[in-house]
Amino acid sequence: MTLEEKVGQLCCFGWHGRAALDDQARFCVQELHAGGMIVMGRNLHDTSQKPVPHIDAVAVRAMLDELQNLACTPLLIATDQEGGRVARFGTVPFTRMPAAAALTTPEEAYRAAYQTGLELRCVGVNTNFAPVADINSNPTNPVIGDRSFGATVTEVVPFVEAQVRGYGAAGMLACLKHFPGHGDTATDSHYALPILQHTLQTMQSRELVPFRAGIAAGVPVVMTAHILFPALDTEVPATMSHAILTGLLRETLGFGGLIITDCLEMKAVAEGWGTAQAALAAIKAGADMVLVCHTLERQKETYETLLAAARSGALPRARLDEAVAHVQAAKANLSSLPFDPVLLGGRRHEQAVTTLGADAPR
Image (cartoon, rainbow, N blue to C red; front, side, top):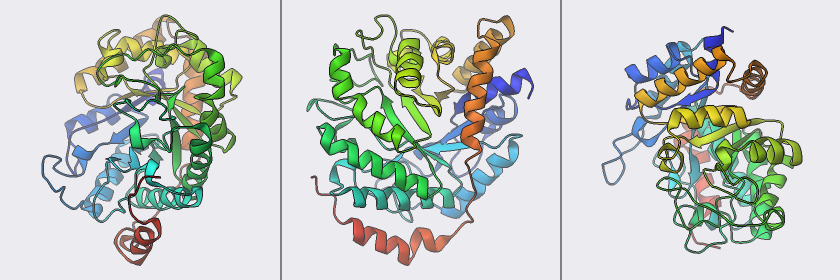
């Protein structure tokens, strides 16, 4: 790869076309050499309509095939399909999965992940930003809530392990989030920077346990949290912290897969550091891919900032090559699945809904 292509592989971008590519999508893939693209609800249906209209799965598959065909290197095509209220493909013909807190057994969690993984692959998605490994230990948490499997380590761990295995069995890249733990916050990092004053000992016995379990189960991707943990780093949030991403996640927990940031347009980092500078800091700290979901101007600025740093040496070539290697290793595990409308809307879909049951909290 050229230097420009290597830098592009570190970027996962979003676009705004609905059931079709737009100029932003084409520019990100062809000019910015994006290594990944994220599918949002806006790409699938008119999100302002209530109830949400049915998704045209045939059109989505055609859109994502066209997107892949634009790329010189296969794309990670990602989405957020956790179940419950965070499900971009959250309507017919896709199975409406319960929220994490509504799943009653690890076996049920496995089946939900397996069915979700097959459905996503059927339309061209290969990476799901799930499961949530956060422990919902703070009842006032405004952003996690029922996205978590529970309020204690013993509730969360077996469900995280089961979903990692379920996604893997379906051929889907799973992603643990939000490292090293977003469950005890009272602030939503979309809008402000949370600060958690936990000791490392507390984190080792609580927040980190589900991540250890998911890593042991073979999860290929981990997503970072925009949260400040002064016990580990008093200056920058986890997304930009060498102590947390390299020292804790890589060296202490032994994670060898792909590290991706949460979206860098979230205010927790965008207002304090700026999206592009946060991206550079994240890659230098040990992240392999940066997520910028919304604005073409910020996507261009992010790519140009990383490229300038690579050219000047501010981003060391060894770190760049290491990050690209992690991206390529994740892509080596991708496989295609033919489009199958029966998988989405037929007997197997009905069986999955019946088996999973109602969205009753545990």
